[in-house]
Image 1: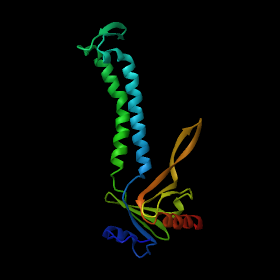
Image 2: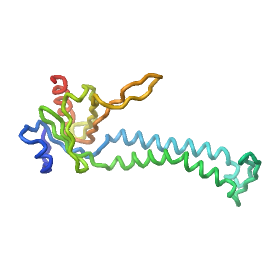
Image 3: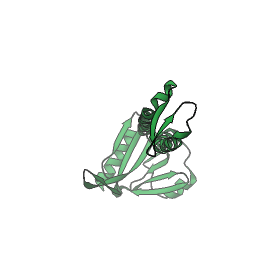
Image 4: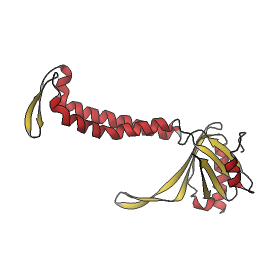
Length: 200
């Protein structure tokens, strides 16, 4: 389960004298399906807000004038003078921005490198964006998701820590996740990690 690539020196020092049980480089920070879900939500949001906005001014699309209540005043708006819609356009942009943000986050997530991952008997070591992180196996739950194929697999780990959120009027723990996207040996690594977590 050792990928045939050069191991960064900083990662070698972090591993120390421990034996590497696996070593892979994740081509992506997030699994593709996660990025596509975020992109889809962004597009859906943009379409819904755009449809709501167009419902107020649909006559303008046909070159006709329309009457709108602006600041409590009935105002006539025509295609050749859209200045009365200034406030409406501002609100439109504000409500549209979450959709664009989600779309951009998902789009750029498709190309963001996931970093290097090393597994030893005691911990998972992650090196990405110039930073080393250590995760002892006892910090993980055995709720692990793995999918893909032998040449391009994805693993999603859950830590025992996270943040509490409200769901159905109850406070529940939303576990911190560690994503390893687009790697080889995904199924073998998942099996090894699950065994280590259960043993500890």
